[in-house]
Image (cartoon, rainbow, N blue to C red; front, side, top):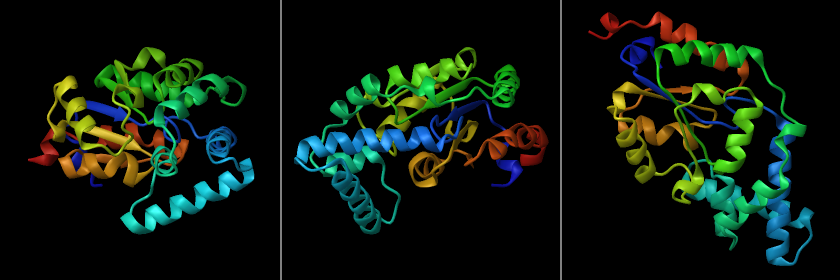
Length: 220
């Protein structure tokens, strides 16, 4: 997106997993926990459940033309988003896998001096809070919007409308940052929000430079 789109930003909403940190091993554990959940529901092995999840995700993605979330796939297979996240909160131990990155801490410290920062995640609040705390990022966010706010996973227009209302900014004033366009950014962009796709820490670290290079005069 052109830098001029960032000229009048007054707030930033970050996705969490895969955006503020990237850890393939922990991401795989999340998939494993979901597979174990579906295995129990379907009375099949975890390996069979993983294949079923992968196949269902492909089918739903082909039908919709967009990437499908794990929550949507589990719901399609007869699962409950609430039950799935109870398992995530109880079983997952992000502290054993994640590593604090001082570059990200520094970035958010700098950004928080200029903008109110928020998180909007498909993770549950308990786990998201633990992750943010362990990564040393708790002081920088005014609020975490989590899946247990309404039990509807991203992308969700109703929740996006609520977020914009609660932070009190117009769509053009709120930058959304995420690692999956279809999940994190497509709906905000349709609402008129500027968006930034970040799929690595290196891409995330470029955000400050992009924001600094945009001035209000550029958009006039």
